[in-house]
Length: 176
Image (cartoon, rainbow, N blue to C red; front, side, top):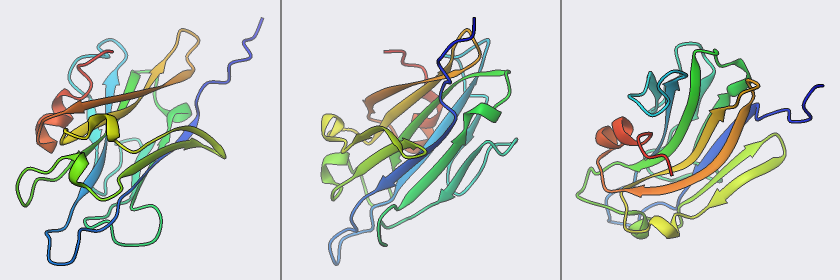
């Protein structure tokens, strides 16, 4: 018998925030995706996608990268084509990090940060980082391959006090 669960397919992660006040340093938030091998889903990432880049196979792409939050609507946009991702991978964790160019800055100091995760017209998750206001980085989503080979989505908001490089290396080590 076939399952009625189609799994999660092509997903967009959207991030927006308001620009810094006049005279204040720019605020730069970045979406980061970490992909983990099927045999070691909580180990070191097999690869990362961030800063205007894409995965080696083209299934995860950062389509839009803002360094200021200026513009209308979505400031950063990442597309994940999970249905095309090789069976060699079993988990993808998506997070957001604040660049610390002008000293330590946390989500509570960013003007109106918001994320939204959608699949087609269906909204999977949305949030405003209020639960991690004292953090400099946060995971927002976890996608895991289930026993039938389909991808499952789980909202996974967890704050970190780390610079973007450290966050990228450790963001998938937490499991709950």
